[in-house]
Length: 251
Ligand code: HEC
Image 1 (cartoon, helix red, strand yellow):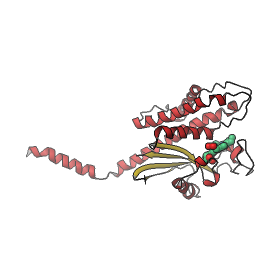
Image 2 (cartoon, rainbow, N blue to C red):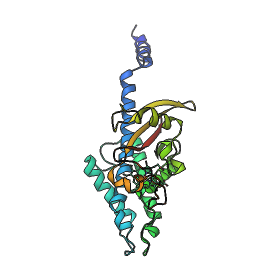
Image 3 (tube, rainbow, N blue to C red):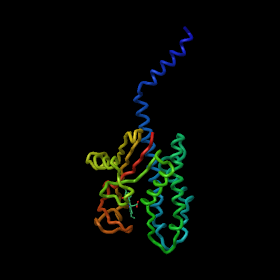
Image 4 (tube, helix red, strand yellow):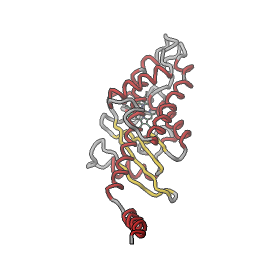
């Protein structure tokens, strides 16, 4: 009799394993949403450091701005710690979280390295190096590092899109119009779900972004007037939906 025990145990555990476990499934979706928020937060911190240094970057009287990639990354780390209490790569991260965060940090550092000549050019005031451009370049670099595994993109409702690379795809457009633009959507709440893309399960998340006062010199009114970047202003107001950070993670 005893020699059957192992077989019985194996088949019993197979039975348990075959049963769907809704709690584990929920946890994994929550963990993915958590990862999406982490990626979005680090991107926002990076954009914030550009924003805090915008006047310096735009100063035509200074050559070397002292905003090397090392100085920039130091500020990113400090601001991230202030926000979350831990550095981007600390806090008991999983190997996958470390891989994504390292790729995002490396993308930021590379973009800063590649724009030193522009940032440090004397005699030029507005250089077009603004948070939105920085974020797009970082996200493009991130995608080039990780391929289909992970994507970060800033998108916007179709009528607001400036750069055609930021155009929402079908899924993003549906979430922007049906959810974020609806009157009863709780302000700031992200939307996420797992969907099948080309036969594999993919986590998709959209985190809304709204205009604040600081955005309105470019995105505010009067609508149609050309802003400092050469784009017509959208006529937005503080609190209006500006766009969204879109996260895609392959499972
Ligand atoms: C100095 C002008 C300026 C300011 C200030 C500014 N933006 Fe933008 N924004 C731009 C430009 C230019 C682009 C297009 C960047 C590109 O080519 O990728 C852009 C792009 C965007 C996008 C991506 C979608 C698109 O249209 O390509 C969003 C979302 C956005 N801005 C939101 C904001 C928010 C929110 C703020 C304030 C926190 C802000 N912007 C402040 C100029 C500005």
